[in-house]
Length: 274
Image (cartoon, rainbow, N blue to C red; front, side, top):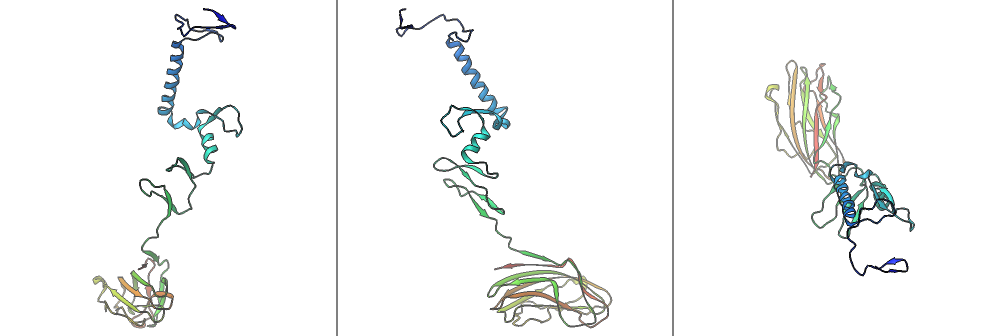
């Protein structure tokens, strides 16, 4: 083969029988190139399967310096941070045009799928239908038949708004017994109460399905003889009028007595705007 300008012209002919290169300046044959390609494929498969959990620590050739220099080894974490930023809580998402970043959401929001062909988004967690109110301290009435507001069983109500309210009242009394009522903003459109007696606690006077145009009517009462403990479930439908304020459970003794009548801790109500 002729040498032209110190180059070997092969005339599109194969070089055959070439031994494996050994020294850095030696030529290599196809067998050696195939072995290198196979090793590279095996290494990639190994990192994707066996060591997938550590892939962020592996090195990838990339230029993330911002200049026109040659690529250099970088971790996948460094490359992703360079592309999308390093905001904790950010999510890499696929959009219709390519890969992008969804910024961290607001506290109390959840990540929502909007179906096939749509991007994900954040949405506010809806509040529960019922809002609970639990009485934490027992409250006494003695030597009185005047209704008093319970200090904790209170519902803040808006003007011109309807509510469902349900309560479970835990009551203890001596010989004075008890009365239960309710109070609220002036001039409601309607208050429909319903109470259910606990047979083991005696016979209650029950008002069910009555429209209260004024507050303060007795909804449940018991004249106790000796010590009484009662569990009294009650429901209310309140159609509030033009005045905002507080709807509150009231209680007192059925007959004045020195022994306490007590609304016990653990009584509770829950309410929902409808």
